[in-house]
Image (tube, rainbow, N blue to C red; front, top):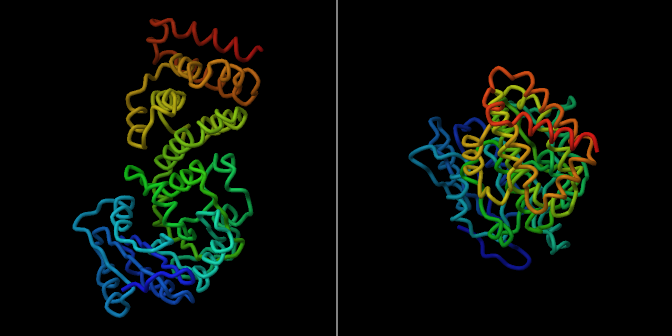
Length: 376
């Protein structure tokens, strides 16, 4: 049962997605219930766990009426579970804390204090520390802390080009802003939080990070983001092209755009793709982002894209909003020229497998484009 919200004591709704984390769930629940800010609603949604997760959650719910347990008969995935839990929230503020992470006792109070002092902000995160599967602090240098625990302007979309600098469980959002942005993309698996936060920025919702470690992020080898690096790579590219690239084009930040495309083709996961799939990916991301509505659309566009490298360049040159702007970008940015040269090398290396290029005179077109953009 929730305590009514007041100006001095707003209700915080916490969503915890649970799937086979019975060994970690008690630590998360107890840390949430032990917060020094007490007006909370804790929704635990279990996505058809096969361990004792449901029994653990229900045992805590019997002791504390602030906890609500929702169960699913079949596993639907984290994003679908989150959307279902979101229908049940009553709070003015929203947190999503994973079933293996542990908030520090003052997290909620300090984030609310920030919102009170900064009414123009809609999302606030915190620095983190890292714990292992046994709950021990990881004291050696680790990538998670190095990535998250830096003060940067997260309202500058350029700082979101290469990845997500926010720990999902460390976030608190205003309910009103969350309603406008929407829930997680149900078609995404590995980076839905990154996509969600990017929508906040694109939508003009201001973001801040408290430079204090108020969340323990657990690394134990079963974290979903680490399970499929190539699928994560594809989701990152979608986020860039759907949400970030249009703004960069509008702001004429072509070096940033070209630099990210260069990162993509230089990435290890890109190198592990087949030649045909690499060409389909390039063709897909050089089409107008306005044609892509969600990640499912993006996946389908890759599967159905013409792999011929000539079509990749032609799509790029016809990109909205202005042909001349992209011509200028390609001419003046050496990093993009390097990307095009790398693409040409790939084509030359795969001549025997792509007779269709010669049949459609695509090689002649490509040579002409390369000469035009790398010589001026």
